[in-house]
Length: 240
Length: 249
Ligand SMILES: Nc1ncnc2c1ncn2[C@@H]1O[C@H](COP(=O)(O)OP(=O)(O)OP(=O)(O)O)[C@@H](O)[C@H]1O
Ligand SMILES: [Mg+2]
Image (cartoon, rainbow over all chains, first blue to last red; front, top):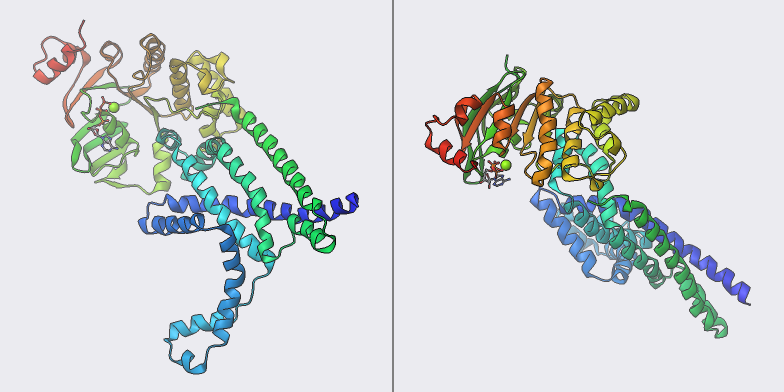
């Protein structure tokens, strides 16, 4: 029994890991781009990005997940069921948007999870990046500039390596939170580890597999804690 | 032909006009000390030369070529190779903390000038010997004293083989007992015929090393003369007299 529960939880946990890894893969670079937007010298871009980050960080990930999963399908339904008179009464540009909506369907569950998680975490990461980038003294940019480096050379060779060191502690907190947040995927019926344990409650009234999932989370977040501790130590060869 | 020619540059920060039409012509081999009261625009002047600040009006020529003509700068692509000819040393050193001394020095020669790594390392070793820091080649900036950091910063600037070196108060952030080692390196550079503009509050150093002293006051150059004349008792400008009297004793 124990072995078969372990096997099926492990299968669920594979999905957990997949959500985790892909979220990092998409959210880290996207977060960097969003952080550039939130520091943009063009005021309009800056405020649009800041407002977006505020909305994403200010609402629950669970809600975002539900909206992204059901939203497109609902918009499609609404557009397809519109009466011809109603449709004809609209201005031409609105009509073309509505006909585009009409082609929409429910997202694939997994795609919806990835979109919601990536965007949500990118916004959190962007704030961490922004703090890290703004903490680099102006003199570092100037030193690079007077040595003839281009803006991108200064950013990738001088600024970013120092930013990484600065943001490891807040990043590791956020990333460990992500491990646990993956469980939210089950609200749109993505089969992850907690779901796989609940199956046992429904079928045979077995509670312990649910507790057992905790061990998976603990081991994985413990591993990450050690990994980040190691990286932090690795980057401890200098201080500014 | 002058290496550097500055014609009537003006610079304001908001409503505050910091440079009020400054002109200066620098011949090869000249060592110019820029002195003057705090807030008179010395740093701003230096920073305008290599576009760390952009001028509002006036022109800057390097080797007879316009860097900025009537405040219109050359496009970035043509500008960069010109700016490289000017090395700069900052008051706060601005070494790259995540790079070792060697990496600090070879970074730009390799990634900007396209030198091979071997070539760049060889040159860096030579420069470190000149500034007396050969044994610190693998240290990190945080492991060095301020004076040592500033000497590395000088070596880093020299590694780009500049035609002219700009120093903005290179010893002002140092403890008094560490200024000597940095000034000695700059003095040796002068002996090796490097053209330099040095903003400094070290009057003895200016008198000893410079062959020209420029006095800035309130956004203007109000005197431009030999150190003998500027530091002589006979100087007839009250502003300069008042300023210099603070350094006596
Ligand atoms: N980036 C800036 N923004 C606004 N004001 C500035 C800026 N940089 C300099 N200033 C102002 O310009 C004036 C001249 O400054 P600058 O640093 O050139 O003087 P300085 O002669 O180098 O003085 P010090 O001897 O104290 O270094 C000062 O009033 C300063 O406050
Ligand atoms: Mg200054």
